[in-house]
Image 1 (cartoon, rainbow, N blue to C red):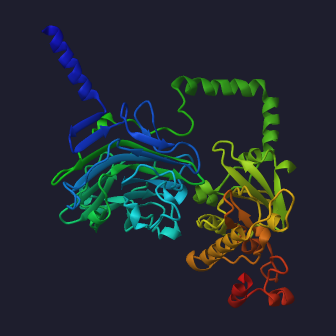
Image 2: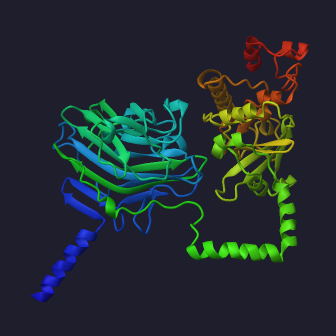
Image 3: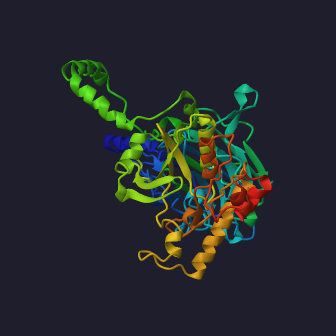
Length: 540
């Protein structure tokens, strides 16, 4: 009898300490995911301490996690979708402080197969063809860290309610209405590397959808962040799966879920997640120094300086080759500034075997960033002017914020004495002119490919002309400035550089920037700077 009592006590102890508690036929709660049997695909994995990582430290990748069995949201066929409630704790950990691409989402879907979904702005949910298709039968709540104009995103830090599309039915900048401050709105940064909670509630009778968020240790606010009316009976199928999806773009990020609960039925709220049992978010960056190291390191450093002073001098002289020009006002541009040392090592010292090409604006080299292993293209531009340098860099960073699938992404810059280095996404198929002139290493493009590239360039120009905040004038549209990515999509490069080049010239003189034959005839003939009408003509 004593032995039986001990077994029952041990069983009860295990149930209490488990991170997964099933509280009924129509609800569950995970306070951490150790030992759970979620269905994972892509980059998704569960760490030994119970963190559900939807992505790893890899660019342009997607991951999914689903509850293993589907749910029936109707009591019987033909009835309306029942009320349901979801809560989860998540965290986004940027590899580079202050910048993430692209985001994650909670979703309800009739299938777990998302092999055809795209990464980056599609969040691993849909693709260019399936977006906006009513046959998707997908309801999702997105946590988006990129502003994509093609989906009419309001900013690069928002939550949206999505129906069969990445264009949100309704969206709002991330934050919460603080009950402790009389309901005053407080902003939250999705990429703060901090844990946050989200609640998604659907009322089957009123068809109202409420989405609420708050920091981890703040109780659920009484006022939701988003509130919309939409009859999900017209969207959801039975049975359907519930889970999470995430994807990265050109910059790798970690998207994590720490806890999750769900409840289905009238007047039911998602079970409370036990915050005390949640695992910690992964740490990115150098590990904190131990106390012993903090004490011994200054002593070792002092001894090292006394004994090998000559070596220190040689080391300093060696580092001079990595010297940069950096002023206090550049701190506001944060992750858009790359170190010259990283770019030097990425390109193997700018050796000729990494040279991709050269033109009027300088030489371009292929590189691989040491930490993230991201493939980049580095353009070295001679620039000696100090006048207007702050406005110059601000314009570069502004161009770097432009995001459109047919533009080559400008990731950032670096400054050295006498030169400027611009860092772009690497386009593996190089420039269009290599194919048009039928070089031996490149096959001839067929008509379908050519027509698609023409449409891609037109899409990029339409965005620069009509959709971005400031109209960007190119003045040098030619085949060598049209780059091809790994899927042979056309992307327009060097946009804005003709304008940037003017910063280095005397503002009192006229100076034609561009390639003869690709400028407006009157501009090439007279040498005068363009009027607004002439600028438009130059595009054509």
